[in-house]
Amino acid sequence: MQRVAALYLPNWPIDRLRQGERRGAPPEPRALPSLQAPLDPLTEAAAREQQHVCSVPRGGGWRPGARWARDGDPIVPKQILPELVSGRGTSEAGGGAAPQARNGGASLIAAASRGTPPPSSFARRSPSPSKLGEDFRPLVTSIRNGGRIEIAAACPGAQGLGLQPGMAVTQARAQFRGLDIRPADPEGDMAALRGLAIALARRWTPTVAIEGMDTLFLDLTGVAHLHGGEAAMARRLCRMLARFGFASRVAIADTPGAAWALAHHGEAGICAPGAQGEAIAPLPIEALRIDPRAAELLHRLGVTRIGQLAEMPRAPLVRRFGAGLVTQLERAMGRLPEPLHPVIPPEPIAVIQRFAEPIATPEAIAHWLSELVTRLADALAAQGLGATRIELVAARVDGVPQRIRAGLARPSRDPAHLLKLLSRRIEDVEPGYGIDSLALHLRRADALGAQPMVERLDEEAAPDLAPLVDTLATRIGTGAMWRNAPVESDVPERSVARAPVLDPPARGAARGRIDAVGQLDRSPALHPWHPEWPKPARLLRRPERLDHVVAELPDHAPRRFTWRGTAHRVVRADGPERVHGEWWKRDIERHSVRDYFRVEDDMGCRYWLFRKGDGERAATGDLSWYLHGVFG
Image (cartoon, rainbow, N blue to C red; front, side):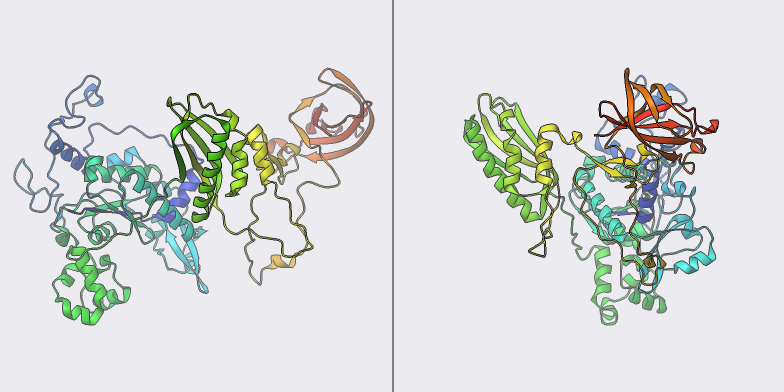
């Protein structure tokens, strides 16, 4: 029997924004759950499933040191839990139906919150994303729809104020002050949802399909027992997403349509096998994922629930609304199949060559390496990728693998360039008694499409430094190579930052509005480094203090100074260049002043010195001298 879980993420775009804001924040302290608190429904169902799986439940029985046996009354593992079955189920204690188990004839277990607080024990273990969002202003995302800017998504707090997707942003601003409006990113949301689907397909179930912009279908047929049962799997999935800051609802049923309807419009949880018709009967007809125009017409005819629609004859419905309405209804009831279109996780690219007889000479390794590189380049071209990190694994007969790793500064699938990088390292391979196989693995790759070319024949193309950078990286490592990038700051040590050796590909600037006032400014942007005041190419990690400095105050360069125990006599100097502290960033630098000088000693060495203070006011500095950099 097929069992499908619908994973509904009601606040997916908002939770992605919240997760980005909380990523750098320290974790909040969490109190340990109370041992005497009652188990939430999903925990009860999971425990009951474990009782039926084996005679000795997991975690059952007393053992020394158990947390529940240390203090307080112990929780008896063999305690009979309430029945969580369909409306016909009864509790073993008294034979009556459990009051919390009935819901339209189906047993449904609450899994996570859709704007309402989660169960108490669940909330203590992991704070609800909706509750975390209450500490912020109401957050909505906006998207342009023609000539109108609408709300694309709203946080639970904003929805409680009446802000819904599709409302005009101007109307929302007029109704509520202090509204936090962010631009929507539907492409990023869809890419993140696909990434989540691939992660679930690798870890939870092999069949995961994307439905809309906020729902995933998980085929649990034959895999639920690997996670402790359906209830335990749903509970673990909800708690995992909650730890990452995502609100979720899980509903499990025999059909994808019924699971989707229960997750979106019903009580999320587990529907008993064969009871999906009774479970979705009280739900609105929008839960069938039908055309909004057909739903509006059905409302005008007085048909508002799925149970009313299921009792009507099918032929008149097909003549009036088309086959789509009846198809969705029959699929939800389980009378028609609903195929899933699962996501396919990308398979790692690797080319392997096995040998009938072991090889041990460098010539043989180089020959087969060229064959592997050619096959790897063909595989990369077929998928439109370029390698940025590859690894050659030589399997020896004694089971000790030999590895050669090579990284590339830019994506490439040029066989000659890849072979050149790996051939330099063949001497590092110790064949031992022989090599049984060679495997070339692609460890990291990026998209590589068509490359731009020079349009004019009389114009020289810019030199490509990527091959040179890759060659140097194989010898000294990528950590020893970087490029200085300018940063907008007046303080020298903050005006430079490490950057990759090669510039990232230029991105086209966003096209501004026609009536934007900023387009009137045609002047080029100022460079962060002032060209009239050159700085040394090498700055010390920390400015080093100078001793025995002889200088005339307030604005003259030093005549003599001692650095690292060596005395220097200044013959030429230029300055001062006054640098004030960034008082708008650090209050301690409100009055700080530095006077920089370029000096040259009698040996021809040039240094970059500065003095703390302006020589007139004590609040600006203590008049101590430091060496900050060296020219040349």
